[in-house]
Length: 210
Image (tube, rainbow, N blue to C red; front, side):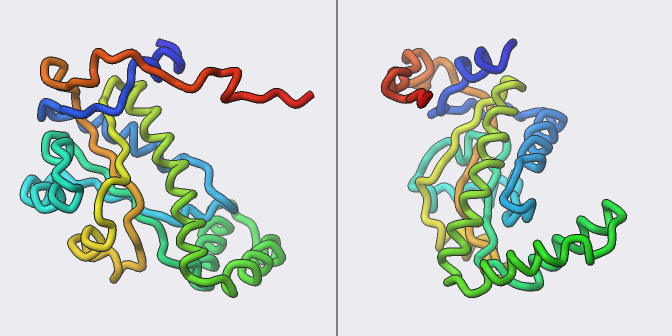
């Protein structure tokens, strides 16, 4: 199927059937998220993959009782850096330069420009910037899931502070941003599955500036 057909097939699944998603499909989805572009290539976030049923049961009330949390096969948690630090930025550049076989001097000017721009900013501003980068990976994961005919429901409806505490994210210098349950739709019991997909009319959504 074409990409557009895949996107027409997918929807924000409200009821999943508990069926397990094959690991190769999960790996494909994670690979797509990993390959997402990010500002300056910093990839300022991590993805946590949760399948432990006891842990998912604890997350469900944190996500206001949404059933997809426990009916899904896998739950992806996108967690962004709580701040940009000199160590984090330097580590990314050092790793990239090593992988590319180039001396650090080649990227020193750009790295120093980032440091002088990011480090003086408030931590909350930097977190919000990092969180926006994670949304690009979230979108990649959603699209890859549709291609694999795996249902996925992006969620902001949860208590980030409570989830951060449960997963120990603060100690890792991370803050949760979004959730993405992966699974398969319960076509008999999901009220949304047969609803027509509706979007803003293209003429109101897209403006061509010649």
